Length: 589
Image (cartoon, rainbow, N blue to C red; front, side):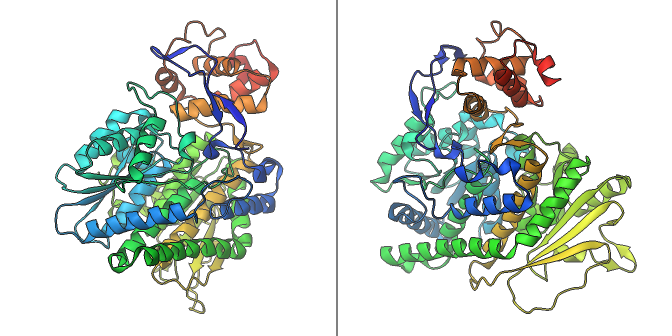
């Protein structure tokens, strides 16, 4: 798949004023490549979907069939992780005003937040910061258009580090493509006396995005090749193992988000574990062993969770088919990950807010984001268990909701939220309107189970003997991510939101998704040229039958028009397949 040729050019349309699509061609980035494992996932049953998701996640650690590429255990990748851990350890123990900034867009920015939030609880001095395109609103709702704003990235970075002397900057962009991160990275390289720049992504440098960045004379490729030159001087670091294609093509919320967590947690666990006293060889060996712990956990999780996940997937599918909802309830980092997973269903599958929602025990007091409680902005931002209780009061008895409670141990405070106290249920769950499932990730073999209230439909225990005290919390959290990812992905596949392994109801809400949409129709209709594919897309975005009046507009303008609209991609896919000359409105019908 990685060798498929993808044309970036041939269309002389002024997409950015005087900037048009380039006439060059290039290979499809690995992060955008279709995975052969899941080519028929859309016609699988729940067991088949689970098996394919398992095989794809195993590829994070040892992808096969992708040629001679750097993977997670490549010496260069291990060395870079080790070197960054060394710098992190120095900053974490320093008494001067130094900082570690982790940044990204969408999933990457949410993982950045999760990591900074967790580490500030255990490292004194609030040394960890995060920036995310779109600000804290992007933690709960899709704010993907700001991903294209490289100036906003620079301003956010400057604001977050204004009082710091030395800064370790870690930018995350799975496809080596986000302008928001490119701007920050370039700024760091212009100020190496203060910043140590690091990029985490999952394509080789030559596959970094070469499309022009709005209002700039550089591409992401230009910026990352500059970083690559600095790596030989140890003034910057590039961590970019290839993971193989995503289970759902381009959906980096899955493998991309998971391996980002693995890399970040490995860096900072190692930094906390006395890395400054280790030799280079010992340090690299310890990093490799930490990564193997995650690989082993992935295997143990999938071996012990088949019945659990397939049951949850089936229930979630039934809920969505009946216009009901799926609710996640968890505590701590798992609660954050539940909110993250639900947030990402909207742009990925064209879902509504009420399709999948996440809630965290302790609400904003536990969530601990920089801007604090923003629940007043609307129901998208109401994330506490009290908010869920209020929501359930309004649900009529015809709803067939699925409520998934994920506990990280038998002592997890989320279990207290569902216990009966003096005849009163804290979450006021009603068996007549909800299918309540409790999943306990049990790493303490033999510990006594708690009794569940009678309204709990099923208790599942995923027993994993981690034997990794240092990593235990991190490993359990990534297991909860795999549960949420599998449930939401499987349910949306089963209700028809995926064709083969492509998301065909995605929101065209930024430049990356604009180009991805064009690529999808060309994949389905090889005889359709890039110009024709773009024509169908613009017809759907602007509701016109003739694109002459809109073709001169910038991608930014097209994206702003497309973002609030539903079924943009499915409409133009149908039009292209049928070679429709009818209006987009007729195609939707």
